[in-house]
Length: 292
Image (cartoon, one colour):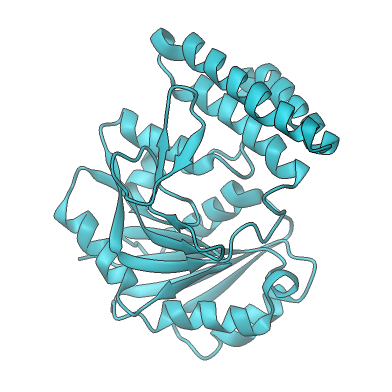
């Protein structure tokens, strides 16, 4: 077994979650039974006291480091910079987790590592995620429209959740890390899809469990969420779909977005969200040519 660098991305965590919750998050990581582990907290340009609070909490641990970024690089850029910082420590595995996730039990990291060690064809794994609303996330299925459906069983999943994702460090760097064009949302779909194109699978490891507050940054119903969700799904299709399936995927995605989302939102008088979806669709169609 090899060492693990936990990359914890934090953004205005004090304002969102409170100092006590931050302490519980760090404690849940640094009391893991896995012996070869270090924690890299990435303060992603917070405007509150998040950096200072994490710094004060981490001072009690030798294997806890806090990286302060000068601005918000989004989920993708913030995690990439944490992974680059971790490179000097030569971890075999990277475990990306949000600041609103608490590891349940002391063997979460060890159980995820064992799953990767046991199957070289796995590129990434996630624990069973217990959400605040009582739902259970064991990965996501994706149909031809590419819109995800959360799975509670973990069977036949297409991608694993970026809220708590362990992957092979060398593989992560080899495929180009997270796509920083995305900024946030759908980056886990894109990353898992790229792994699949290289012949790797993904898996939900039910024996490892975490608690996830969820939607603490923007809120699940915020216009900004729907903008990135729409734009980035389009980009994911353009980047990863074969030409044979590209037109069908784009057509089905467009139909599902405009029928299932916009009509429903208009009926509920959420015109701000409808506008965000339209803008995300336009930017996704226009901007895909700039993708790497």
